[in-house]
Length: 486
Image 1 (cartoon, one colour):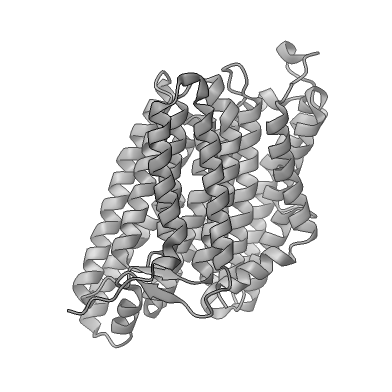
Image 2 (cartoon, rainbow, N blue to C red):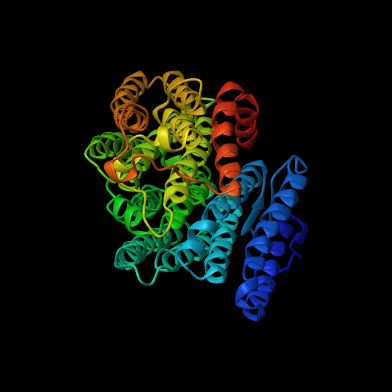
């Protein structure tokens, strides 16, 4: 067997991040407690440098490079996914800083586990065999399980972590079983080789692979939190510390989309006839139940959890339209990126307002928010408008792109249903706006102002303004998403 030297230069961002994690771990162990914030700044510096390294790779590879014995690929899709993951994670950690300090959570463990999760997501974005996909996914998942349970004195957080771990272990088992069936039928776990074998496969091979596809889809849809594998989402989002919830709700969605594209579009395109109707049913159920159940919620974290289920349904529409539309896959990527930006901002508002150990997560807490802090209320208004798909926010163009892709793919009926569900979903987003601007503050909050730390004010302002600017000038982000699938 011939050994080919890997192209190490393409994996410099991941290698750099792993070395920095090891260094930060040692630094954090020896730092006095009063200097533990050094860990935070080292983590943020690592994410900034990693993003710069990824940007230097952007458009430097005119054709994909597959290396490390076929386990790793570098192409425009992988680089763009990884840049988005690093930028979103940087903001998630920035939002978490005051929250975890206020609750006396261990700073070093939080950020180091978060960095391991980011590393797992970067591996998932460039994974080109089922083995590498699984390793990246498990590195991400195990880190998230531990992070959810970090608030040790919270029974809700402990319960959420146990539910997340048990359900996640089941989903990982299903995914691994599906991978083993595909390997048994094709004799390979490499993406291109699987596609090549299935293009000329016998009927018996197709039967086994279709069964494996069912298990693989179950594992992937769990990671997304799509119906019918959504049962963990509301409990974990509500029970986990808010700083952890905004991390789960953001960057991992981007990594999951990348893995889905590698498996369904690149490894199993010959099974489109099988996976397309499954995704249609899942998308419709996710949009229906996500929007319907969100209406009944009184906890904003739980409401946004059901909202995320609905948004995953919308994102799946792009993958469904992709084979028959030039804009389908890029519309799915544009949608998930813009949703992640908005979701991170929404949960960040909850984290920023949750001061002095008191969670600001009931809808009634948002009554009269405009009178207590007009700027935060305005930022929340922009975020809710974007989630509802109201112009001129970026959420409008994200939904419009999906609808155009569906019409181009001759799925007008699916576009009509998606539009109907979007109208239903607008109700509970606008309800928050109504509470903030047209209701008086609760009795215990009347006359009190909410003071926000300057660093948090800057971060949420960048987030909110980005939602508006990307809506007014979406072309740059749209072009980046198109390049990913050029």
